[in-house]
Length: 318
Length: 307
Image (cartoon, rainbow over the protein chains, first blue to last red):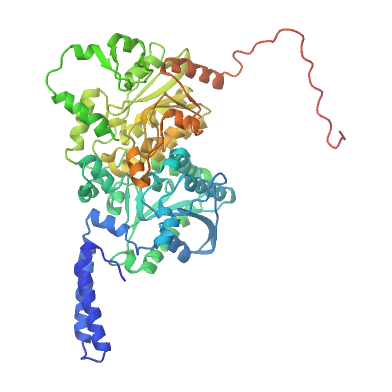
């Protein structure tokens, strides 16, 4: 059963109609090919216009769409010899953070991601993509490993944010995030991060202080969720659509503010309508970003990465 | 808990709560034990309640005054873009910001100064919690980067007194990017071989805790300070459990290995001076022990020799 978002209702209705007509044909009824083709064109046109003018709140919903490709899908499609690595060597293995080594287009790389999971069972296992301190400590360990062996780092970020829990605080959630950001900034190897869905605050930047940061067309990247922001500033979580507008969390805005380096266009109707095409487009962009970085030595990479982040805020005006 | 409910609303209430009587300023009520404290006693006790020892919040200027030797100097900070997102909730961020600036007499929530602490030169960045909840936007990022550069330039340690609700929502993802930006500032200080000391004051949460404020060579905190990543309400709603007693307080963090020490305000200055002395002048106080000289150890046995 395909999952439609509220604002996709008219499209869902058209597609339902097409499906119904098709069934009549299959059942040996009258030929309705022409009618189906007409409706299909209409649905496509509607999809196109709807997705061309998504509001920031609608983009937030698309970014959280359950059928949207997740970090593990990117790894499965883009990385060969995939070898997951586990554990922070201190307390636990946090499955909200996916980490490992493998080959991207033949080149050995380290890969990090935040994984939300696909069904109830895997969502619980991955804690809905919300990492605990162990997750960020695992990330830091993999970044350091990559540095020691000269492996470029790729990260795929999709998280509502770091997990807000009692144990997470007791074990130093803030410190773990801070150290992970530091590890990103210090990495002596090329680092390309991609915000594939939700870029939720500190939990996202912990894996995304990279040389190049890509963002999918309908992904969002924000300092706080629209709901959280609305409940604080409007004292009403229902004002989330307005908060989403005010926060400027879309890929287009982040690019204009010079906070991300490039926006990767999504297939028409969003990455969830054609995951394979969305993943392939990301693969191409990652490759294009990585290529020139491979020629730079560790000192140059670090210096440029620092310069880039030091500028953020100085020249960021809409 | 956030800066609006904690600070802005009460402030607005006092602003519009009618004309203020003079005696209001003479007596303060301790927010912890609710006892009345005469203003001069409070001042003398560095704003620590003489009845229960509760550390009241203090402003940036006062912090610098009580930490530095007389003669410290505040430095001018580079201007950050004003309201880069043209953010508006129920009010315009530009208006909130201008108002905070006028009231505080400073551009943003951090004051940077250099001076000496019991003779040891130091640079201090102090947060002003009453300035939009000490929240971190581009201006605060700029202040910390400037403080780090000044410390390197002066070959002096950097001390940051934090008090912040976290990232400033009204600057959106720009605020988020101040996390890596301020982490870079800590690297500059450390790479110059200088101590970076963080003193966590009440309250320090969110993106400030999860960036530069947890990266000190030494992590100090004031007694009872609320320090954490996520807000208590958010945690309660997420895990649907009652929070343990003393959760996210300085003593709790000390217990959990996240801090080096909890230091009373009256001892902060001497503690900082001693720490700087130990880290920066390892031989300054070397003394010759009295009595018989201890004979030197024999040189190590050559490689391969049997024990």
